[in-house]
Image 1 (cartoon, rainbow, N blue to C red):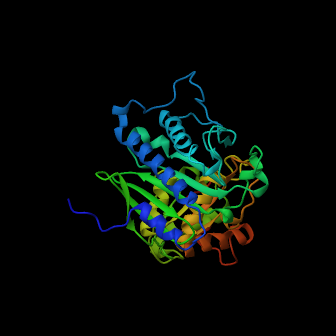
Image 2 (cartoon, one colour):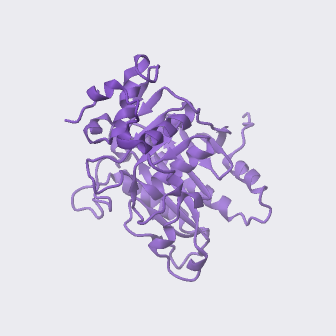
Image 3 (cartoon, rainbow, N blue to C red):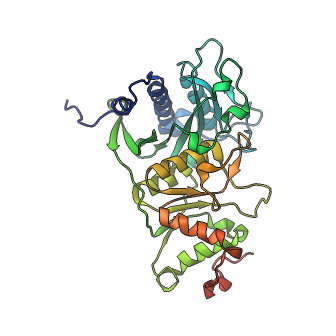
Length: 363
């Protein structure tokens, strides 16, 4: 057997820890527990129909509808249980929060309590499971507030802006299982070696190109878009004959992890903006365990992430399951979309003539 010369995730974390000689090692242990949960979910996903866990939760099952009002898939429930059970016991966490749980999850009294908070979407893109499209898990790590020591955690303890994250990452379960991680010192990608059962460092310094010719948006919502978003998409679709002077490709996978991974690997911009489909909602994606970790990863890889109006990482959370609009990816494209939002009605004085005959006119 020829040993790989690539560092393992454990070795990478040890190397990162050397920057902080006073560190206790709790943080490394937490990330390794999260990685173990991702391995377990990857195995369940890989079994597919053979594992008997595909499809929706049956009527009458407990938590068949989650706190988001969405019908849960069986793998949603299984993945959430895996993340909870593999991370509650180690003594690194003060509590957890998940897309699949209405309230924060306190660490049971039988286990030691630590100083970190773990927030996660245990199975992003689960609507794609039955058609064998890549799905993933997203996570964010915060420090528990000092004032939370010695008392039960409350929702307010988790309501920290994304700038407070100490780590964020995602696992993508595709042809290969990968773990993408930032601990605030760039972004690294690890590929699961199925023989060793170890995540091996394969992408040491991921960078998002500043420019792109690729964008991702759900065009079926075009009639609900705000003017700045319509303007941006129209300009892209106008191609080399339009104001951008180049042709663009449009993508849409309906899996945030898969979209983020594609952009991280080759550039692009993703838009899931606020729209008028449900004016009461500020967006569709969850701030704390979807938008913030993806934004942290993108910024650490020289990309940008915005609501369209402001930097995602500076949004002050008000609710555990708060939603926001999200635009992220290649920096110059995200900045252009922000400029369009800052202009009156989303169009400047030199608005393109073809804006009047929008390729995506409201129905």
